[in-house]
Image (cartoon, rainbow over the protein chains, first blue to last red):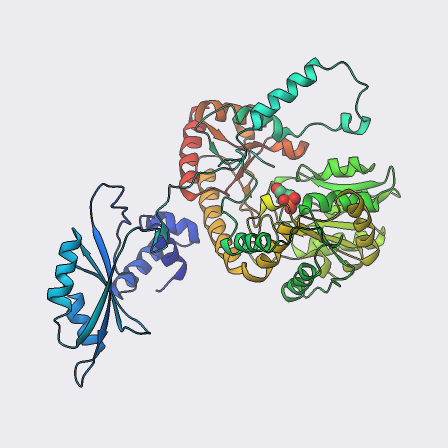
Length: 161
Length: 407
Ligand SMILES: Cc1ncc(COP(=O)(O)O)c(C=O)c1O
């Protein structure tokens, strides 16, 4: 069954065990396991993954935001163009957006050349793509709700009334 | 930056100044006879140690919601850096009035029934000073927050403590209040949800207390600072009970609900005459609550209620984890219904509360607070706060399990 509290707990820390969640929300472990399984199968919970600060890991990775203007035609809508784009493993995410451009694509590569090449060769040449505008990511401050600053410390006095 | 860092250096300097100074006449008798907070002593030990996992903290681990901090910064940028009305900004009083009306159906006139204070701490002090004549008695159920009795004493009153016990869920028995009431009794001090036990008194008991207050014509001073942190059912605000409104001074604040302890802001609500009396003292001793904090409080009460609910959800989850954890390792405790404390018994270990806490601190580096810091009947218990991350709670529980197994 869909349980929003479980989702929020897992969103905060996907490694929280069903046993712990059960205690946290006052349900049985069995119920929690069932609910999680259901939500996984229903595609509500799509995947569990680590949020990595690659820069801190000393790994060079380049991200670019590519705004794409699309001309949908009969039988080939935004969804079809988007699907052709997101099939590429280089593509990190694809959003349909309002405004001057239609799709916002996040592309990932090992260096700028690689990303630029991908855009010029693969994206710009797709049927239905009218134009693109690229901006390279220079620094990540916050991603998916996680900040990339130094981990915060507990500055409170250790014992207070 | 840690604002608490310089502390020990300053303490040393003060100590040496005092040591060098010649003997002055003693300070006030009332102050002398008031024992220092049991928590302070413990804090001094803990602060000499490193890597302590603390379940001893009486304030939220969450930072103040950003919208609130931002509103304060904006007010500073705009140059709102002056005194406000003694009562506090009318806009804030209006916002609180609306809030109390919406949540509790209580109406307090923002013009003269609401006073913005420097936290519930000041509110408590003002309430006592406003209502007490010398020798007036105030009934204080224990264990309770450390400031209740000193506030009564500093106001020249006499605290009459009533012990409560685990069998009654640390909730005061109305007949004990009746037995303690004398012709000198002026007020009953209540604090539910309670620090340090997390106890929440059921409606029947509160109603009975109110009727005793009516019978003996007593004020009720109700510290409801943990009201929003109620996990089972809805918080019962004392002035909503029949016959209570006209004799209750409601104290509440922003410290716990909105994680705003450092802002020093709260409020008192009550009958006009009492609030006016409190305002008179406040006017001469404080002038007004910090203006920037008042701006922050407006934002909090209007726009940070979702954040408050998110924090409550997490406290609630931790509450269940820590209660199960403590019971599993053989430190029996009740399921608290509010605040962010659990109050397990350590009686069967044969150690006193002080001994238990010191030993636990030195051997496993876990800080908890001895129950006797909150009144004599707290002896044999410890207060563990779950205003700390789940991770730390789990680690602390592991260490405590090891410790208890060794005893
Ligand atoms: C029961 C109780 N009342 C009052 C206070 C003080 O609150 P404030 O920060 O509003 O002065 C506390 C703080 O720990 C508390 O636990």
